[in-house]
Length: 380
Ligand SMILES: Cc1ncc(COP(=O)(O)O)c(C=O)c1O
Image 1 (cartoon, rainbow, N blue to C red):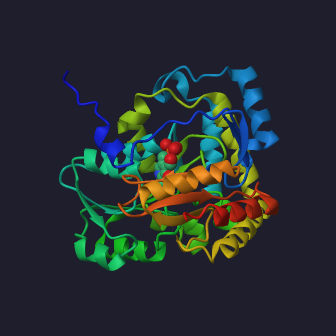
Image 2: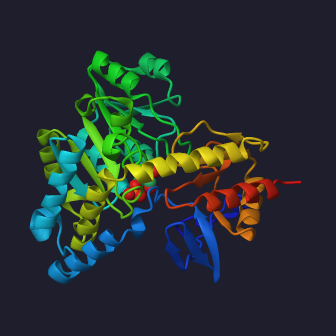
Image 3: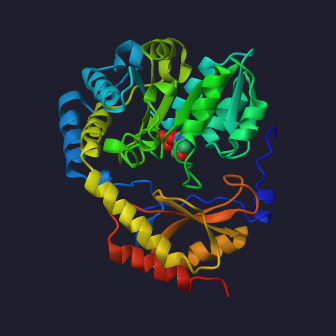
């Protein structure tokens, strides 16, 4: 057989992944194996996936336009609803233009593989998401990774005017934020471009939920490439890349994952548009989320694990050992709380963790139940 399909090594190291079948997810709750759980593993940070406005918009668009775009954007897939969404997104975020993608994974591939050639360099934070790192590895540009959030390490590697610095707004497995004033300064001084992946900051942070740059008071035009996703705080799925009109025009001419892929289904675009409108008005939900984060952090402060210093919806509890992490997640499930157990290679060896995600949809009682369950599930 020409392929090695063995998973023995992963199994022996306790790193084999299984694919759970979830019967139903309804925001703060999910059902699997006929049992109900509180959901602390999703990315629906504001609870918008359950907002009736999104469902109604999707239903109406399905009736009016059908359920599929039925073509790639440059053929006949790019419809008025897509254009309306692009225009409202650009206005909300203060971007000249945006381009829609069916996933954040493909958006990141598009930017990095399309912009960079073999004479270029890219500098990526070591904890960047797999989609960024994989795009970096596949692009012909040389890639250097710098220590997480270490601007001195970045400055030591940087070459003037040679490429793209890439980092995240809110890091997906750690919940902390990049230092965007510092990154913008390094980029400006070295005459390089800067790209933010704000998958986890969009909707949650900043004025009207505009994201990490707004939260940190960094002007959108300091960052040449902005990428955000619709599958987290916006409660749907899909992604966009935003920046100058020239950048967006270049991408829609050259990015293969854009040009050669069926466009977002109109009901999805309509639901995202409804989410973009709601999220700007969602200050109450953002405050509620912050309140739940405070309650959670106070409740677990005495646990014998490191709780990473995160002020966002992502609250990782570092257990370290992989099998211990799995055992705790299983015990939490017994107690009715569904929490992600994240192991290498998704996170560095020795830092297996419970990735706990909170949402404005959680009640105070939900958080208390999780805190109690965590105290009860400590390994003995
Ligand atoms: C930081 C980050 N970037 C990109 C992605 C990929 O986005 P999508 O799920 O839309 O493919 C994710 C998560 O899935 C992410 O956490």
